[in-house]
Image (cartoon, rainbow, N blue to C red; front, side, top):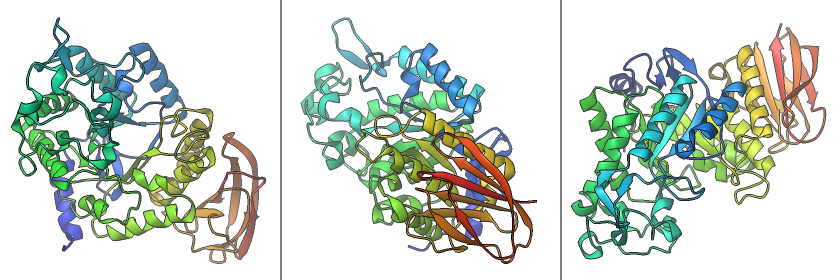
Length: 459
């Protein structure tokens, strides 16, 4: 399809996302990044659950305060109701006979959500919600769910077309719950109650300026499902006079797949892109795939978010080392947001993740990330996945070493003196600060093994 022109995109973004100064929106001066309360903002996150709004208030407040202390300002919020910890609430009310009434909302569920948004707004923390999480509606979570016909007063299996069990992994996309929209199976019996839940979520979320909207969690569903809900949510926002930004998160691990183009090719519908599934990749491919997407949408730039960075020892999606590398590669390559995924698939709010955020905030004091450009063209004698560079030539150079190493940086055009700062990533400590003279190829060797960040600043 023909892509929209750059000027067309700017017009769309300003029509749909520039609202009041308080709202989170693409930054008018650099559409790859976010603006909040009239100022550009880099979103960095590390939190230990995907649906913190379900947490008891005391736990939630302590967690948000710990985030705020290290400079983390970004959380993921699946609107999930899975009974994982024992204190989660469902969105619908239960009658005395144990059956749910889908015409009656559960005040507790939505009060928790409102409190969560109030506390995050108070701390200038941006919330990226996911309206639907496919894992809520299959395997062991479905038999007890209010939408299951055996658990509610509102429809039977025959009326709804919903079975009592769906034991397959949701990635197989066989659950009819995700086929209810008019251009799919047109199942109004279920869709009316899906809308009821979404309407209440939006009624609350529209009261807050710190919310980004994602439709699904890593979905492999049909495009028609996503299109319906994107348009439904946008229409609700327009009628309410609210300026919001929406995306969809697809399941494909390869960002160059056709599935992701459903988002990339539609800036009029999706005002930002979530590319979290790139974090299933490792090494140079991880960096290169992100670069390829950035090139693909270069004439329609939008913020590219990574709301979950996989990787933690003992988890199923890579090691702690993988998680650290993925997070830093994205940060230096131009993401608008980067958040560590919750345990056990990610580092959550841990000592290592907090140290990564702290170092990134120290770099930001020197040169904001939106002034840096990711690219390794100035590096030589570099092995694959050894080191990655983001720079503002002549002023700032930031190098991330994945496991020690030694590379040459071309400073032949910059004959200035540079301040040299080495940060040990896992400890978060500034290990050394020295000086060097530019004007030639400079050999740079990490002080030790594992991950290091080097910052060169012109004096």
